[in-house]
Length: 177
Image (cartoon, rainbow, N blue to C red; front, side, top):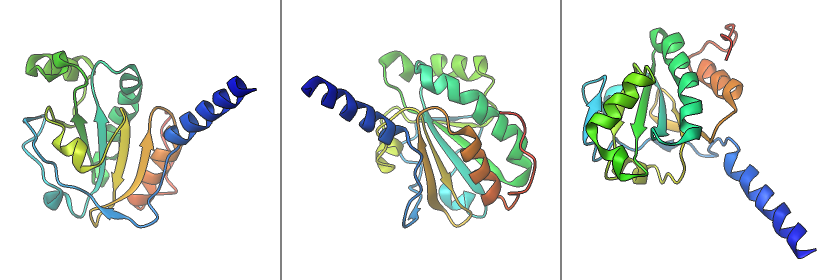
């Protein structure tokens, strides 16, 4: 009986951790802090990005779940950049090898990532978001407020619908995801 209760509790906690969430009270998006370097972009700030919808993706290149999310983020970047969606991948390493510039560059090239990537080796942006997981997607509205968070894989249709709603294009036909 105890084993069954523990299994149910573990399942519940896993499902709760992977569920998308909206913030009851939108919070101001933290600034990108302690970024070692930027790939595919000059340094960005949240102040510069006001007036745009921003998707912040926390990822790392040795995380299988992250690698499964990247094609969706790539597709959103290609589809919605013209509508003022800015995607920033915050690469926060789990392992020492993921801190090496050449390894991050190779992963960005291999994964065909064209959006901005901030290399957060010291976890300062990660900590500013109080992040604890890979991958996590945050959506920031045009006023600079975090209005959505999704932890883990999946939820792609919901995330894209929220992107489109924030862009003011909720009725557009979504590409196949």
